[in-house]
Amino acid sequence: MIVWREKFRAVLVHFLVTLAMAAAAAALIFLVWYPDPFQAMLGGTRFFVLITVCDLVLGPLTSLIVYNSKKTRRALVFDYTIIGLVQLAAFVYGVLSIAHARPVYIAFVKDRFEVVIAEDLADKDLQQAQDPYRFVPQWGPILIGTQRPSTREELNDLVMSSMEGKDLQHFPRYYVPYDSKYAADVAKRAFPMPSLYKHRPEAKQLLAAEHLDLPEEQLRWLPIRGTRSFWTVIVNANTGAVLKYLPVDPYES
Image (cartoon, rainbow, N blue to C red):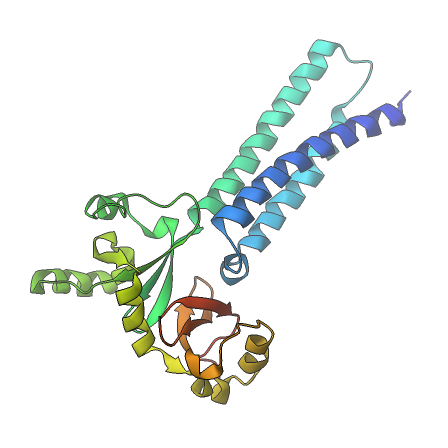
């Protein structure tokens, strides 16, 4: 005779353990790897929800199937060890996939910002960089600037690489700090707000809701390219400091 109360108790325990594991992963992913607004910009939320729902459903469901109070303790330990290893392996694989696609640098390149994800950076290119850019950041994306190649040979190499999909932001040896001097240069290249409102009037409402406490004359905008689409970066017109990211594609008409 099947004792359903015991089965559902096993399912509940399994569900709570899985939920705790998912909550810990969510804290790491959304508070560290994908801080606001990059989870929306890069689509990290959708993938995490997918693997978490699968884990929360399929894991406890196996408990409903395999749990039987008539089994020996050794048999139950064996069953749950196999289930736990399979479930953990699938969950770790999913989290690592999210980690490889996490934003590590926000690089200003020529006339826009570019989101650089972890898997964009090859080990050989990291080794050619100067500290602190020789390693992939582990604790969230870092705002940086870039400098152009200093020799014709480097410029030719960059042109060839761009034909393969690797641009300036993918080579850490060209990274420079986003300090006050660099940021001031960025501000000079940014565009006045009316030019954005002309094509995307909804940006004005979105910006008004942010309460930046700065007059519009002191705001400028620049595009930022993620892995899925363009957004808009609002910067201080005087200092070049990044103030806000708006979910508006400035190139869309």
